[in-house]
Image (cartoon, rainbow, N blue to C red; front, side):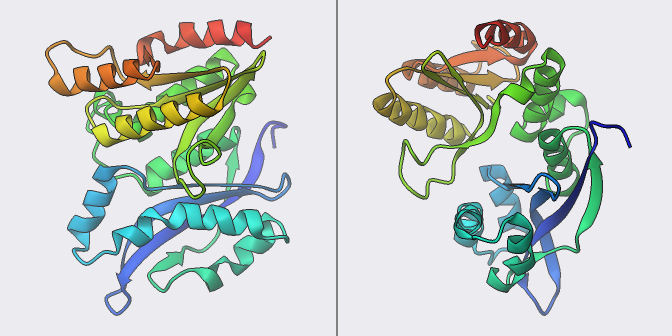
Length: 267
């Protein structure tokens, strides 16, 4: 096995609102690297994903699903036995409507990229007809951003999935995609699809405001699929909302140059 390959295991989280019918929808993935003791998770987060869940199960408990990631992370943080032991007990703490798939093994060259791939393949709706369509969603955009950051060589130097509750409120489930520290400055990067879920842009703007209020020096960058179009009311709204909070907007075609500049500043 190549030296840079990681032997990991993963399990899929399934939402089954009607146990008698045994109909389920995949809502998340948990990826574990036993040798390194690392466990990460990705669960559905966008309004389009929740709307899909509601369409498939009209009586779905969306509040349960919305709060599930924060609950799982809180359980893991409080568990003293480590990630592997926590996984072994997890099924005992889940509600009847949430189930775990059997454990499967996977080889990964990059832990975070593998988590993104598993989410894309196992959880995200299969709705992309072309590469351009893929970049209209956060999942597709984040996958492409990971590829660019990895090619530049900066991905391994960034913190991933950064919790914002220290700046906002305990229990806030939002997590920013990347974080870094530079000469006393806290930096954050988050991907944002301009044409989908304006509520995510509002959440990012609110989060930026709260981080700025509690941090002496900070910078936030949003990565979008393209430059905002002047003829799109929605895209102009998102761009102006972010600019109002001092959040820089970097279109994906410019991400590699931006990442190289950041890499030089992080030396």
